[in-house]
Amino acid sequence: MEDKNKQNLRPEDLTKNGHEKFIHYADGASLSEINNTVDVPDNAGFWKTLAAYSGPGALVAVGYMDPGNWVTSIAGGASYKYALLSVILISSLIAMLLQAMAARVGMVTGKDLAQLTRDQTSKAGGFFLWIITELAIMATDIAEIIGSGIALMLLFHIPLVAGIFITAFDVFLLLLLMRLGFRKIEAIVATLVGVILVVFLYQVILAKPDIGSMFAGFVPHTNIVTDKGMLYLSLGIVGATVMPHNLYLHSSIAQARKYDRNDPKKLRKALKFTVIDSNIQLTIAFVVNCLLLILGAALFFGHASSLGRFEDLFYALQNKDIAGSIASPVLSMLFALALLASGQNSTITGTLSGQIVMEGFIHMKMPMWARRLITRLLSVIPVLIFAIIYQDNEAKIEELLTLSQVFLSIALPFAMFPLTVFSSSEKIMGEFKNKAWVKYTAWAVSIILTGLNIYLILGVIGVVPSIG
Image (cartoon, rainbow, N blue to C red):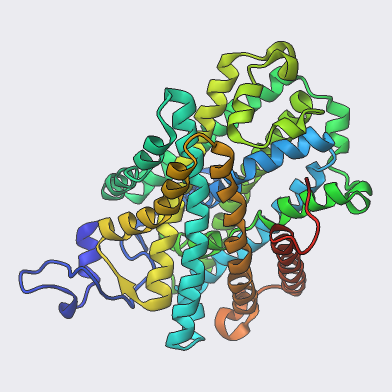
């Protein structure tokens, strides 16, 4: 990895002794240390080929089941039973559309979304977009840090401040994995996704949900529009589902596979299997989010007011007055384990995204260890400050999750609209441009999601009424 990365450097980017300079100019391939490095078979069968292309979708999918979504999904079930399953379904279909577009843009152009956007803006514009996107990545990272820190506290009784501090060092795990190869990262992430899926599937089976009502929940309910509380929670689920860093990430890591990129036939095949991988993994994320809502409906309906925090959910799972006969410490521990797995997964993808946008928007490249560590520490600082000030009040710390969604909402249009423009452009995409129905659907989704996010921001700052 390191040797390949160094081969992509210019002579002026190296010291007299041949070492990589701390900061230097970046204008090469996106994530050059992994770009075009993963071999894929030429004439293998469907399943073997799909296995070779599988991996990037898992890294993207973790963003759709990160700790920031957990309380919202479970509270949705606890408040309105299965009615909001239709909202999760719509959100997942939107995610599949946008992520497929992002992957296609990266593979067809050979540039990630940040690089393409920078090409269309000035140096000052690129710097502005970099700041906005970095804040969004930090906001996402804050949710993972809080989730991981609370999971460590619940699992091992580690003080929250110490647990948050520990999360700052898990970046070194990523460094180790990068030295072993990108496929190792994909495998670790996929395994952790599997852990999350199995944990919640097991809990839902024990909860014995009402199957008929559950499937009826996938049909949009008229109350979603007429009930103010249900509407706002629905907006929260949809508006916070698509995260900007996932679009940048997918446009880059989709380029990891090695094939003849000048052969339209092979490119078309690569696009096909990349989109299949993405849709499979996002379907798993959809199932996980449905399981979270179903768990909330089956166990906690009528107790929504007492389930506002991760710690509340942890203890509710062992409280027979709330969770009923299946309540047990084992369920609580499994919940905390899944929370830790989710936090670690999202940490990996957030760190990679930080590198992509730094190199793409401002053409600045750092040594691998520095890129990872700086991004991580900048996200840890505000969480640590809150944790130290409010050591005995986890509710205050978790309020950061709400505040972090504001940055995500602000940054999302800056990723969605360029993605829609680039992927629909014949000049940029040639024969691989969006079909008409994809183009107009993407524009509609981008406008609607932007409107929902503006509404969410107004709700957070109190301009419009919010749920609760």
